[in-house]
Length: 241
Image (cartoon, rainbow, N blue to C red):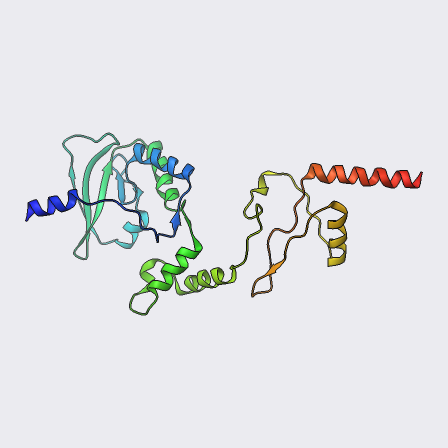
C-alpha cells in the first residue's frame, strides 16, 4: 500500500485551475517569489520563537483560540530560519504551524508580507461570478467561501450591468500619475461645443441599469490643449486686428 501511494504521489502534477478567478500580475509574482525565498511559506501559522509573537496566521489563531499547539524542533535550522514544525490541534483536526527564530525587524517584514500577499491578487469578475453561481445551488453553505450573500449578489449584479464594449485604450488608464485639469459642463450643448472646438472625437455614452454614466469621457493631452488654445487665440486676435 505504501509503495502504491508513493507512486501515485510521484505521478501527481501541479495544474492551476483555469476557473480560479484570482489573478496576479508578473511584477507581484516576482515580489512574491523573492518573499518566499527569504521567509518561506507564510500562508499557515508562523510563530517567532525569539519573541513568542505570531508572524502569520493571526486570524486563524484567533478563531482557533482553544487549540493545542504541538511542535518539534528540527535537527538543525532550515535556510529560511525555521527551527521547529508542528500543528495546532482543534476539533480533532490539525493545522500546520512553523516556528522561526528571527530578529524583530525581519519578523515584522515577514508579517507585512503575509498580510500583503494575501490581498495582492485581483479577481476576474466574470470568472468569480461564474464560480459563485456554480456553487450557489442550495446544496452548499456559501458562507464557507468567505463571501456574504450581499457581496455575492453585488458581484453578480455588477458583472451583469457591465456587459458593454470597453472604450479602447481608455479603460483603467493610470491618469493619476499625470497632472490634469477637469472641465465640468452644466449642459450637453456647452459640452458638445467644447469638444468641437478642441477637436475631441465622439465617444459613445453608455448607461447602466442604475442610470449612471459609464466611461472616462473624452481625454485630451494638456500640451495639445495649450496648442489649440493658442491657435484659437491667435485667430481671434487676427480677426479683431
